[in-house]
Length: 216
Image: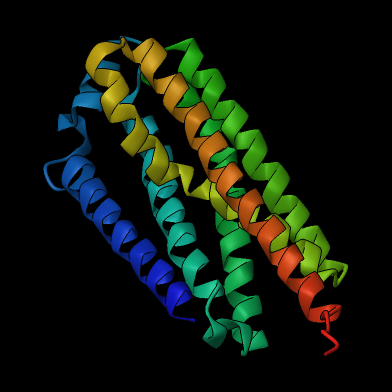
């Protein structure tokens, strides 16, 4: 119980820092002053106005998805089916809308074609895991639903992981290499963590269902 509270608290602390970073980097002084965006503006075919129409909803919906995830793991949410279901719908809709925006944003991704492909791969994983989570929920396969939604949230968390992992790689690698590596590593690290958690939960469930007894 204490470990869960600590983990959820830590996740919200990181999400808070991530939100501040996004605000400072892209919103406080205007997105056109961000170093990442300045590089895009060097391309004569790049339309900042059109890009904003995709980027702002992208970061807003991404932040909403990030913020909902940890609360859905709490007992307060799980003991209130109506609230849990409502937040689950918001989470899924936010992701499905975001998935539609990623292909356009990927076209002007920092790092060129390699990064574009990496983000499209990430988008496929996002669609796959979230869709499976929703399908299992409609089928009332709760155990499978939890496993797939955790995978979905692991992909959502790449929003954060990517920005942490890309920093050291960007120090000695070109963005065309550093950015794709950071995306793929974010996917692998997050999914491995969730798969480890899912396996641990399965073992715990088996012990609970089939407790062993000792005879003196």
